[in-house]
Image 1 (cartoon, rainbow, N blue to C red):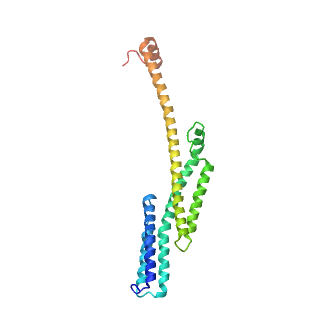
Image 2: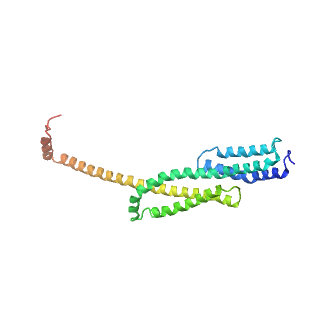
Image 3: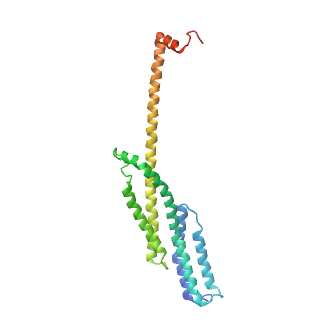
Length: 234
């Protein structure tokens, strides 16, 4: 017995913490540092794990309730590990939705420029749908693992699927964003060229007229007459 509790129960609690705390720590890091979203979910669940351990070690807890406390602690570990990845993926999906909508509007113009050798890696709708179906499949595998009542190899594989879904969606979001930025730059550059040409033409006309006025007194006098300017007026 340890603290009045069956040694086997205490050992199982310690093994649970030993094997799963690092996973929860990585999940928390991923959510905050990689996905950039602060959440108290992990800390709250780890606090509940300790709460169940303390309840188990309490002299007021009946021996027949020890297994239930251990099972509840494992459930909180599952939440601490799995849910941060689900939250991160959901947050990224919102960001991707906005980028995807903008890309669909810009794609007709992008597609035209493909003929000139630009945007050769810009995906069309069929390519996008293929990538999105693969991401959805990975996310579905993650959700399926969540329904398992124990942490095992299959459950770990489901968590890994969530991470892979996030990574692939992040790459796709960055790819579309990059193509959109390049397309905006080309559009802005094209408008700049048009105004540049207009400016050059106006400058040539101004130079020509100024030169004629200086070199041709007759033309200057006619211009003054047309404009109603007296030669002696100041």
